[in-house]
Length: 524
Image 1: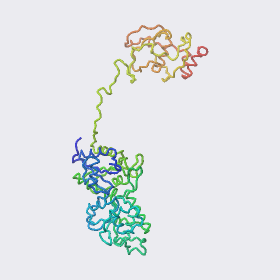
Image 2: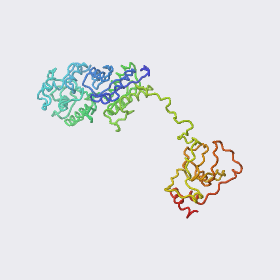
Image 3: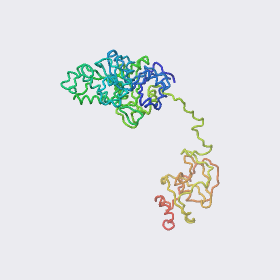
Image 4: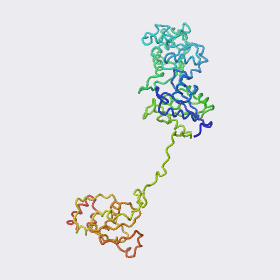
């Protein structure tokens, strides 16, 4: 297979949690899929709703796990689009929520925000701010930094990842939304008589920027866990419970999948990596609400088409119907890449080629001159002994008169239909020997009949004619074509059947044995 060439205008976008790895374990097929794209120079990015670290750190961790080079430009986290708000807030004081320790503060400062405040700074500066401080103690005091100004004025709130203490962080957000111009601890003068009523948001209160709308996400636990989207829903509920009003959409900004802003940011990154416009992008994810809904609803300003592929290694459970239907559902990310490449006419080659067939595979092992029992058109060999051929089911009237009945004789049911006597003239069959004392002659070669010479493969009327007229054994001759029939043969007719033979054809097989026993008393 040839490498990626500029005329192939397609690329991939991969979710991470539940697609590439789940918690700290790699998902099935992840290494093979990404290494294949890397080898064949097919553009791709990681478009995740995760966060809490810089893109440099995440790209380095991903490169170590997959054993391939991953650039910072290929890693788009949920809060990566916060970089575009630097011109407005770079020199102002912003509040950063979520994450562990000082990780998110470090990310914001790496983006270029100069004055970053965290929850630890506020609680340490105002010890009475939160009455439930049993869980924090020395943890906040180790992380806290002095406030940049007093009173503290917050220009914007950025939720970089899921907050750890929802109650404390929601209290800070609520205080700032009801404050005067973002001054912490001050009520807005436009809010009537009470601080908790008439939530007026026209007093230059700070906006809240959420980075991940996911309500839940997959971890090593067998059930989904709450994510940042649940924190946002809780804050909106608290706002309505306190003010009686819905939190206006103008007061918050949502980035992250499945928003239009997040997918457009990802497409800009893909276009920069590919060095040109793209016609198709395959979004591979495990979340119907984020990955699949985002790809299905995205309207590219560059006229590209995004196709969604849902994998079964994360949030989505195989066998269930997702809330948002993907274009394709596959077991894992490797199957997703394989399917997408097939759609592009760029099939994915297996690492180990399939073994070539044996030179004798598919050939028959049947020895020469041996009838092929699988073919209904095979011939009967003339070398089959005459004794191997089964006798007719019903003895003739002459045999019944001189031969004792067989012991234990229950006759097998025939699987062939009852014979139909033909009205056209036919030649009289040659006389046969008494099978009770003589051996039967060998068959001449017949075409168009199975190899089994028993009654289930021979016509009934032929069997009965052979046994109804015993005679001396004919001289055995080599198999040859029969001579043309004479006029006497053509004009001759078969001798009439006895009354017992006619009745035997009428009665069902399970009654024929009874008829044979009683033939001396009833039929003959």
